[in-house]
Amino acid sequence: MDIAITIDELLLWDGTPMPRGYTAHTVMDGLLDALAQHDVAGVYAFAHTAPVADDPALRAVLERWCEAGHHLGNHTHCHANLNWLNADRYCDDIRVAEGIIGDLVDQAPVKYFRHAMDMSGRSEAKRGAVEERLRDDGYTTAPITAWFGDFAWTAPYARALDAGDQDAVSLLRTSYVEAAVGQLQAHAEAARRMFGGDLPYIWLIHGTAPAQDLLGEILRRFAEEGARFVTLDEAMKHPVHRAFPPVSGKFANHLQRYALAVGDSVAQPPADLMMQVLTAALPAGENPMAIYDDIIGRMVARAGGTLDWSWE
Image 1 (cartoon, helix red, strand yellow):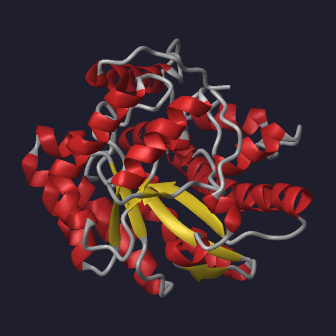
Image 2: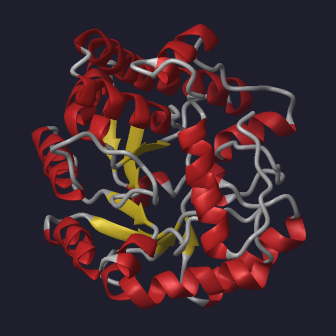
């Protein structure tokens, strides 16, 4: 199968924990090394720009990405999804990001935008209004057709490394790679049922500490499974990526929304495994989702939106 690697959040969301010794710069080192080792060139990353507004020195991370021969796309400023804002406010947020990284986005062969969380709202009319504004500003929307919920490993990985809990670190590293491989297969199986064959999948990983350490292993496993790495521009030639499935308020990617529309689904990792991941190295009595709920709350507050969210 063909896979276009894409990366969201080279600069992570406000409130995201990082293990000691890991920074946006070390994550960049790991990502660039992994991509180079597997001859994956011209990768698009999608970066919300609030971290640069808070610390302008972080723009150097995004500049380094482009200097390495990769590309940058717009991913809004606050990382607020379209369920939380009206169309005008959402488009204003996109244009704030344009003002911060527009010169870097313009260096890419195609000017891409990706919705925060790949969520494009509950209303066809609102999504349409945003798409018209995006087209007027020269953007093409780049969806996601394979992911593995990799953000779920972020907080447990930081806890385990900082605590020196090697059993938890081993569990998290192994499950992270296996989930990446297993979820790519699950998305491919769903696509074959719906469309009669493989797509050139647009795959997502975030710029996190686990990605710094394990992207290379994931790419190796993908190659062993017969994957051919292609550019986003090539993947976007497939009509599934150019069309829009019916809107849904659910936390679902582009392919999953097609599945929802026809009563199908993408098989998820086992619930007991995900609970092991979320609770790895967790202090007694703590809620494993509290850190992620806090991150979501910060996004909503910064964007001035109204929370409309469920993890289901």
